[in-house]
Image 1 (spheres, rainbow, N blue to C red):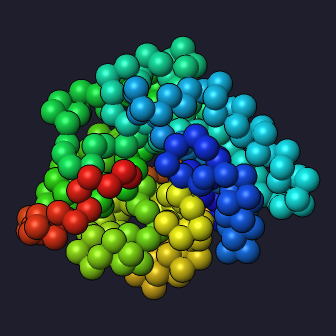
Image 2: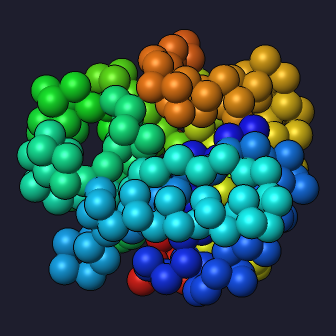
Length: 265
């Protein structure tokens, strides 16, 4: 398995705090069957300025520590990019990173809302040859209430990446229900740890993979956890799943999300 969303680089954002914790997280990942991780520290303008050069330097440093500790975990550079109109231009000139410098960029929506004219933002990325990959859409209350909005984005070429802990119920039963709905309708392309430490979204994928196998089958699970991530790190092309119509509008009470609002994703 390859993890396509992690905050394992120490000291860059709200992820792992120091080198010791980062090495422990790497050991856990390897024990769980993860062979590689794309390092995706937050880029949020004015808060976390993790530019391409910052991330590349941090990856190289951590790789050296992994070699010294004989931890067989491959690292790849990337970033989790909070929606900002400057992103397409910054990617084009190399100031911000896509996932392992591929044609796929990990995009984070604000926690509470869907920004206005977000479709125009996605299109501006696609014009630059970059496919947006939406990080943890299941945890956005607007998309959870109206998954048809996400369905339309995916029809236009956008991809979706779930958090493993969401599928396993670590964010509550309602968000788990959203994950299952998205899986059932071919709307999930990647599932990642979104690792922030040893306990907060720990670097494990194997239980989530078994859950996907039980839900939609081993073939789909292999594509989500192994084949699609491999295409990204090889800078190849992902083949999306066939979308199944959502049918009746899916609705969830927003009050179930209030306890999650305000948390950094």
